[in-house]
Image 1 (cartoon, rainbow, N blue to C red):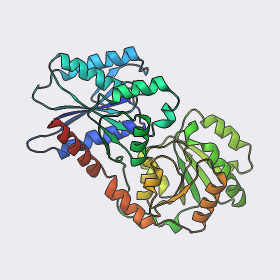
Image 2: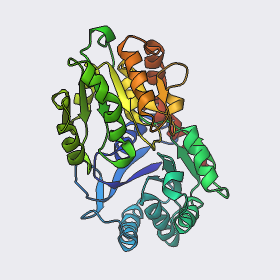
Image 3: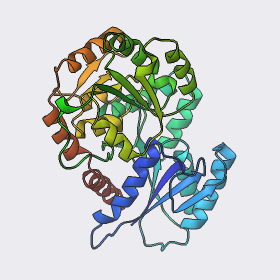
Image 4: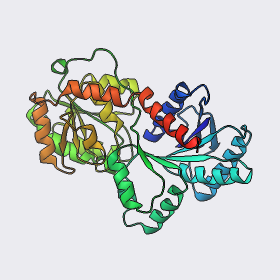
Length: 367
């Protein structure tokens, strides 16, 4: 079985990192009668950070003509594979679904069948609501898939609500998240640091975090806020913070490696997530695996992650509620950190998630 994981760009973003990890793990889950060979293919170069098996286009644009060009190049590449070998195309967000469908059509003209899966990594409604033409286009392409793998039940339900005529079945398969193994630093031995990890974009709502945390910083000069990540709004929020007397307690650290994120999680008292839109944020799972309490907004698949006292939920946009929850954690009112860590390890490890995808592929490849 040949499995092709398609990503938009060679960039270290959520969907791209997931596809990279899944590509590495899948060959371990083949069977003697049906081994799995996986490859990672980027539609366009982008920032060119990730190693891939092939990159179909230079630059970054994924306009419709360039998607057709990418599909033509991909079909030519895949046509050389043995006709007897099952071929899976997995579209991992963005325009990869268009390219997967176009490629399958081109291969069909050559007498080659490809099975298409779409991985849904976030809520659909915030991007589609009120956009009838875009929704109709997405509906057309989704109905050319054999199945959809949704990252969380909330996302699956949301997709059904936006596409009531959706024909492919939806399977809920979680993210792959790298987790800390071995001993972790006890919570009470960690410095007084609040941690936020995410791109500086409007949907992450850094303004809410600063509005909630500002008074806590003002009341406690020993408390620090570390902001990891980069993005279009970073300069703006850096300027806003500079105007406050507690500005020296806030560190804009920028993009860091996964290993550095894990180190920061071992040196913090709480992770803050203030998103307005989310699917199943891997940073929350990383925090659960690191024994770090999570205070997050009640959006998307976040409630599924933090159920059963694994974390603390607050309403999106509620600065007072967020501040009260952080105050509770800093005072020692913690969720069940042990149960949270066990849940993370038994649900999101590469082997467990890849096994679910391999089973899904086998089921449809046999049809």
